[in-house]
Image (cartoon, rainbow over the protein chains, first blue to last red):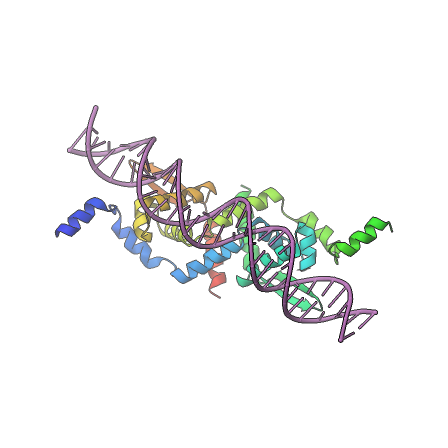
Amino acid sequence: MPAEKRESALCDITIIHEDILRQVKKEMTDDESLFHMAETFKALSDPTRLKIINALLLSEMCVCDLAALLNMSQPAISHHLKTLRQTRLIKYRRDGKMAYYSLDDDHIKTMFDVCETHVKE
Amino acid sequence: MPAEKRESALCDITIIHEDILRQVKKEMTDDESLFHMAETFKALSDPTRLKIINALLLSEMCVCDLAALLNMSQPAISHHLKTLRQTRLIKYRRDGKMAYYSLDDDHIKTMFDVCETHVKE
DNA sequence: TAAAAGATTAAGCATGTGCTTAATTGTTAT
DNA sequence: ATAACAATTAAGCACATGCTTAATCTTTTA
């Protein structure tokens, strides 16, 4: 065994389960997907944005409705909606001056419901 | 209509859909649950923590395994594990010097899988 | 009992997030 | 056209997050 190897065994972390590491490494989701998943969860990680999602689960709403519902400024709401749009959690349609927001698909409802179950038990 | 009411209608945001607001407000999840849900999603919102979850979906692992797998320091991993523990996403058992971590229940697997589906389509 | 090793906690710093106010865009109505 | 309004974007500030290094705790083994 070369000297560097012996030294590194002394200084570095001793890896106990190399076989498991190899196997796990092989089966893990790709980095890019994990990064985007983290972004999606991050979009859901703010109480205000979660309330927006919660509201949109119940009804399509415009920005000023949401601002009134959550008692916050329009810019603040608009900022959050942008975050949710960028992760494709919500979509919107324009009708004159108003922008009506709604959920993009059913994944969000599932994640919301499962998470609610988790925290309530 | 009293003067204050008229003035507020000029200065404040005009609420377009009062009926919907009332209905939605009534049906929304309670604030405390939403707050804890946001904390749960926040725990999942970091790429490193998501990789830890991903690894634990495949196998129980100790801290030094995870540190080696993700090529990070033990304190950094330990810090993340604490966050995941606090939201009851993972649990651990001690065996001598080592702490073996695993997922706490099936909710996490569901959220992980649904989110993966979401970002991959 | 002392030393070693896995794990956790603490302190400190760089970066990110969320709000506010102000400015801008885009659409409607006078 | 121009005024009004819903919405978005920008700039700036306070606070939170994630990493590093160092110190501490806990269990094993020599």
